[in-house]
Amino acid sequence: MVQKTFGIAGVSLSLALVTSSAVYAQDIAVITPYLAQPGTQFYVEAFSERAAELGWDVNVIDTAGDVAAVISRIEDAVTQNVDAIVINVDPSQVGAGLATAADAGIPVVGMDAGSDPLIVANVTSNGYAMAAETAVYVANRIGGEGNVVMFTFDAFPPVQVRGVIADAVFGNFPDIDILARITPDVSDGGIADSRAQMEAVLAANPQPGSIAAVWAAWDQPGLGALQAIEDAGRADESIVITGIDANPQAREAIAAGGNFEASVAQDFAGIGRTAADTVARILAGEEIVQRAIYVPTVLVTSANVDTQ
Image (cartoon, rainbow, N blue to C red; front, side, top):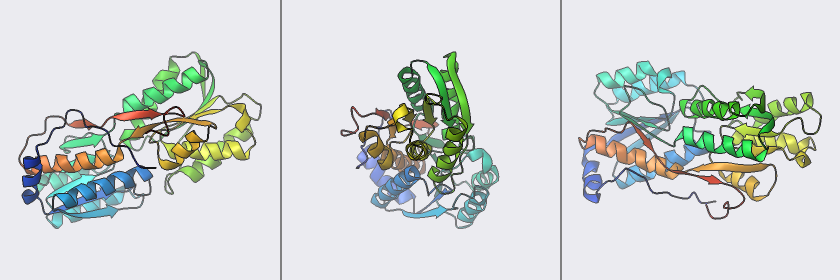
């Protein structure tokens, strides 16, 4: 499934500015511990493609789930005197590295990261809006009552805010109860551990109708939960599953018409390209006044999965 590209509201670059900005940058470091995640792969690829158009050399560094290692990788990039650093990690967990970059005068841009005084700008989707959309979808589908299983990940700011908003939405429905709030192991992407943890929830709640829905802060836990529900022979209980990202597996599950009903399509390619263009603007000397740059999203259901 080809990722759909959406327009970037509020970000306008002239061809002359973007083309001329290439002379300001030679080496860019992109650092993430989350390259195993499909979404990260999409926007890192898009960033790299846009960087190639600008004539940049990009070094993509994956610390394979080791958040602490990002600090030393940032310090390495500073030692190598790169022109800019792009991170995809909670900035509050790598403050020492960000301080090193700031002392060296090297700008740092977040690519679906989080806000921090030492980050010039963070390019991402609006996690508040995405979480509200999927949580409201769940609440409406189950008629405002029933037990909901939530999969969250508070260690990563763009995902953490989704859980906060979903909690607020569900909290507004007195007959919705959070049966379990699960933080899965994401070292392998999140599907396997989410499946195992959902199997445990199903085993502890064997009665038909005891679980109304699964709200997942991103697609992988929802897909793991789907596997567990199907393997337990409980797909006919109409347990509603939603995710966020609309990755290819999630789209296939939605199109199949089963329990996985909805996800939000982030424009990963748009995030990557906009992050690159933001770096270009910074290196061209432009002052960035919008510290959080949001790229539009679309709710994907069976009604539009074939067109998005």
